[in-house]
Length: 165
Image (cartoon, rainbow, N blue to C red; front, side, top):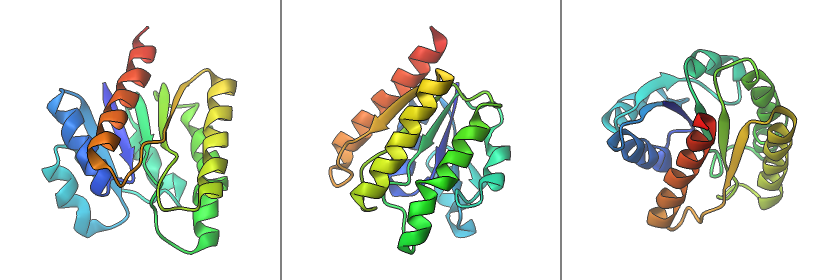
């Protein structure tokens, strides 16, 4: 099964490397063309896409079973971050309905304001309830990379296991 990592920064590349090592097909997105090589080196197919521009993500969703939205430590102005975890996230989730995505892993902890991440988590839970897609909130502390990675890998496995059932 294929996983898409939206926001394939440092932690995303750790996850890509771990999932690729377990035989998963992984695709990772970045807004920065200079980061494409780093994503490829982590064992993922690199895609240039901006989660703030949902249309740029659509091609990356082809044949994806699980979308990992790893934007808990995204940077930018507060209004942009609220939109990224609010209206932009809602738009992305709405578009996922018409794709092969069966589940979502949402990073609900990071450097983004906790109330902003809580709103994103609420939207992801509501998406799961209304579509019956499997959703997992990744609440591991990103400052503890080994624990974060273990929980992220388990979250993807949980979503994929539910998708296979």
